Image (spheres, rainbow, N blue to C red):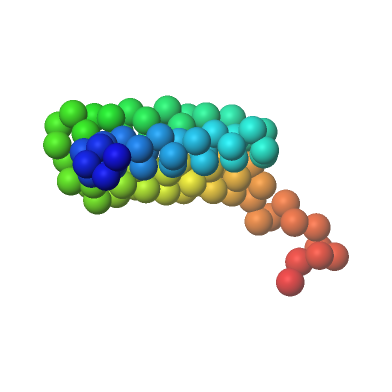
Length: 91
């Protein structure tokens, strides 16, 4: 088992990470988490097949999730600009 875990650690970690994102998708109902699951599985599988170092696959996944967060934040700011805040609750 130890040798198997050493060989497939990247894939096992990717699957566990994807399961965590899948649980978050189910619990929150946010559809973008399903995209994270697919992204995680693809990146860690490709990383394993092309012998990427583990930190590379993890960094790519983190960068794409962060980019998605920035895009979501920008869309939020465009939908609810600061000028739409009523006068009585403005700081």
